[in-house]
Image 1 (cartoon, rainbow, N blue to C red):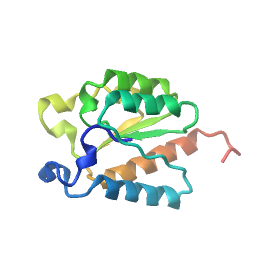
Image 2: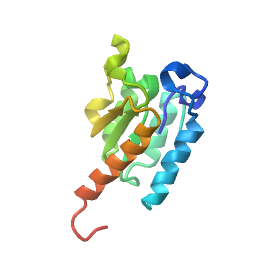
Image 3: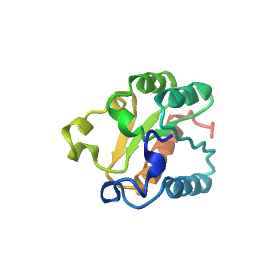
Length: 146
């Protein structure tokens, strides 16, 4: 899942976020998911409520969530509550290192309900986050279940 303004990656502040588009990132993650025989749903919205509705729609049907909440990282309390309710591991990913940027970007209201964060690795961070999430899910499965 991707939050606000990530649909304009490649054009928005390329000095910070790079020149890679959201489509290119989605294609990279999709290719990695196919290599790992993982079913993947990809979704982006600029509206917090739409993201919350999407999470609610797939509650109980997904094994994990990979999300770049964009600016909602810092104030998206309803998004946080939806992610907490999903009862599946969540990995938060950011293209830039939010902890080395402006003070207001250093606080994530999302991270307390996540397994962890992958920050600062650009588009490669999404693939790394997917690998970490899938490894965690595999480790949590009882022996003989996949």
